[in-house]
Length: 63
Image (cartoon, rainbow, N blue to C red; front, top):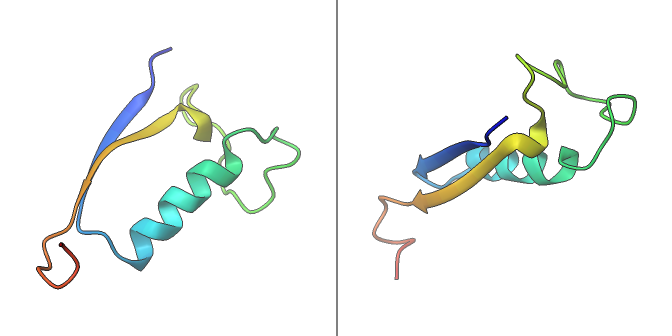
């Protein structure tokens, strides 16, 4: 199954948590993935999500 590639616009606390969660749960088994509501959705697991681009729109954060 191919990976789910995502691009993110607007980097903030919520996106930071998403990216950290993807990396934290990437190599976990179903039994070790405590805290996830659904470890697998339609055959996709956390390790199948790949962030390919991220942009921020706040000029104070870009430099």
